[in-house]
Image (cartoon, rainbow, N blue to C red; front, side, top):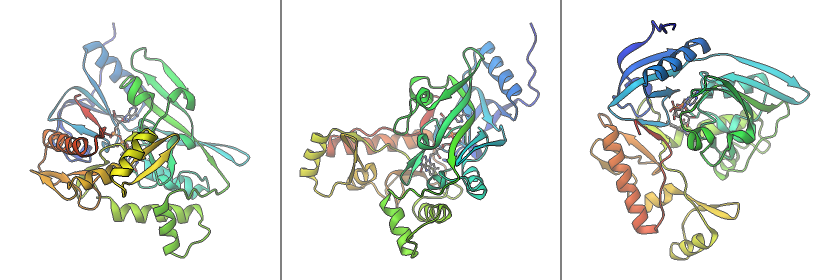
Length: 344
Ligand SMILES: Cc1cc2nc3c(=O)[nH]c(=O)nc-3n(C[C@H](O)[C@H](O)[C@H](O)COP(=O)(O)OP(=O)(O)OC[C@H]3O[C@@H](n4cnc5c(N)ncnc54)[C@H](O)[C@@H]3O)c2cc1C
């Protein structure tokens, strides 16, 4: 039997700088992987030793507890390639590439379609995990396929869009088979023709305020960046993971009853159902701007929980529980957390 050697494996590493909440979490072992070979070796080693394995991208959608046993692998696979077929561009991007830089790169090349998703933190490989979405576009609309390493069999598998089972902030990789697949690269179906998506009211308003009636993809990109910078806390200044709760989806009759009781409730049609604005529900429970010890609810956006400094995952989860209990009591609606907690 060959012994697996991973000379870059580090022990007892503080992951404070590797998660956007800025929680101090000690990984028993940590490895940054820049090649498929070292990733395969790391996975084989973890399986052989029975170590829990956590795959880390930019750490912007998870909550880390104080101790992480086993092995944490940070995905740093890099590279981009392009296949052009008429107006369609298939852009394949390695999992460790930065998401926002990839959006900016695609725009610079004249490949359109990702501009509404500008400035979302994190990596390309994590984007399919929860089918990232913002300002009227979800990843699945621009997704072609992906390649992933199956940690159970060691095989490399290709996934079409259908196979990924994308849903609202959800996919096969997040829900049905959590932790089984490590995404290696993602192929996007982009366009050389500009087709701005202006479904989102705040985006249309922002463009209007700048006197832009027929926006280019670059106009959309810049408008999205301006809105996001004005609304969301920068994780380098205030620890956070963006929206902490999903917007709950309720049946139409349930929505009508809520609307009767709370006429100013904010909601959007979602097929036959309605998506309630979780931020509105939390705000109406009086949580906006409130703190519980070192953690709190962001003063400008009630959907964002923040670490004011020195907080821990336990502090944050206690706050999340209190917020959820308030919303359940007042509106009878269950809030579901968006980020995953490690260890679960
Ligand atoms: C300020 C702010 C704003 C945000 N705005 C949005 C938004 O508008 N829309 C939105 O959808 N999200 C948003 N997010 C959440 C987050 O940025 C996205 O979910 C992002 O895709 C996470 O990428 P990451 O690399 O940081 O993933 P991580 O946090 O490192 O990981 C997230 C999950 O994906 C898994 N994972 C990571 N990489 C891989 C891989 N290569 N293969 C398999 N599994 C992997 C991890 O194990 C974990 O379960 C925001 C976050 C912040 C801090």
